[in-house]
Image 1: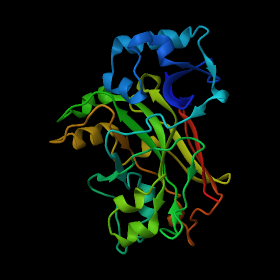
Image 2: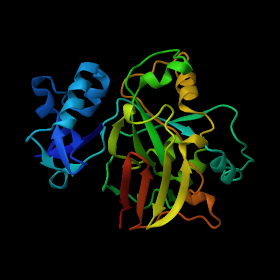
Image 3: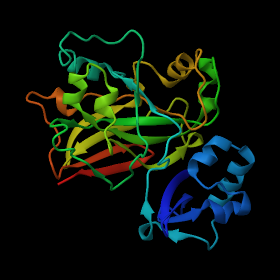
Length: 296
């Protein structure tokens, strides 16, 4: 199942993609009075009976559908419950390309590098990324697979980790590299307004193998900059979920961004930072394409 959030008459509306992705079925049409008001609410319920009803509705959506082209597509979960949990340097090639970028030799990490990305509002496909002129001059892109937690827990065993995932989406982890350097930690440079973009859909984990082995790429103005596969993680999702949950309760709706491969703008010589009007296209196999443009 592919879940989306759209804006209909100014209201945030959770829906299913149906009929080869050309139409949408609002969850209220499939579930009636029991329908959640937001996709985050659906994730936090993680009710198998409700999900089975939605699987049936996806196969037989009836007439209560709308054309996707006629509605405004938002991020699947526009308002997160707390910071996005991010992994830094989780691909060997990315760790290598940045080994001298922070003023010291940086080797492949021996433990996951975690940080939080603050985002009161997550922007969706087609949204404009602010340049924040006067605040940053070095805006970078990072394509990432995001796992959305559906079943919370503490001290989760690695072999049980996939049972705690609701589904997957795409994130562009937009980053102000000058702020990242200046403050010697990452939350500031990662958390400017509009710097968290996600979408276009949240795909239920049942659509993928465990673990998902998905090609991912990022292009700037049509030029492929990043290209890899999630099987190249240094720390895979079972390890990360188990490790994170040791003494820390993961909650339904938490989002874990799994890191980015080589090819970020900072990794080139000279660097290839984003400019006004650039279009960034992040693609992950089986999920789709997230495209955003930098403010003119």
